[in-house]
Amino acid sequence: MTRLFMEHIEAGSGTITLGNDDSRYISKVLRMKQGEKLTVVLKDGVEALCEISKIDSDAVTLSVLERNSIVSEPPYGITLYQSVSKGERMELTIQKCVELGVTKIVPVFSERCVVRPDEPRKQNSKTERWQKIALEASRQSGRGKIPEVTTPVAFKDALVMAAKDSDIVLFPWEGEHAVSLKDALKDKKLSDIKDISVFIGPEGGYSDPEADAARSSGAVTVTIGKRILRTETAGAAVLAMLLYNYEL
Image (cartoon, rainbow, N blue to C red; front, side, top):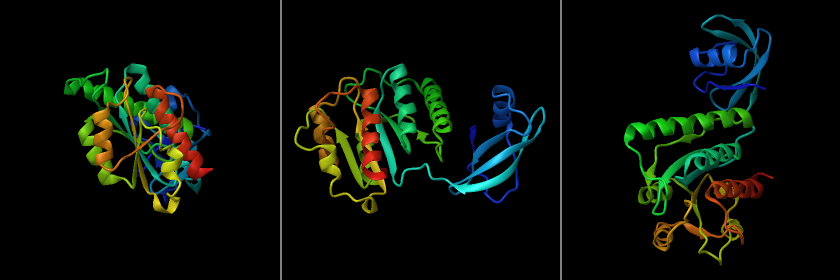
């Protein structure tokens, strides 16, 4: 079912008038008709089943049929600190990690990134595209929120952010062989975890000094298996492991 996000609207309203972009999406892109149903994500964790009651040239009006609490969000927050990768790899990472429940994605420029920082205007355009991919993935997967994709940050700044905002910081690294992700989580009950940060390296992996810096900042270096995963696979793999550990 078609899904829209209007998280600024209170759940008590009986009718909803869509803005220009959403109206155009419904009437011009999807070519939906009066009487068809869709879901709208509202404020405070509520989603509404709605029916299109009116379609004008510049606005679509919905009638709210029923309201329900959103149950699709993970019971914890996950911030993915993803080293910036080339083109479609980065876009695939964003798409799949949104589907798997990520809360926020922070692109990171680490030592071995193939992609280098762009000038601000070009980077802003790229970030807007990444955010659009997050929106589309949220619609497709029935998310209760649209994860934020931030502008890229330097690796050292990402470590500071993660240490400040997380209950645990996981740092998958091919140089770690003793501590698995399962080991790192075995004493971490869901009641102890509100925010998890995950660092994923670039095509060339993390350097030894970066891993040392991560450990010094409080991150836990972990192995996620005997095979080395591509950068666009690793983040989704870790999120799937967290989903299995805490949600299933």
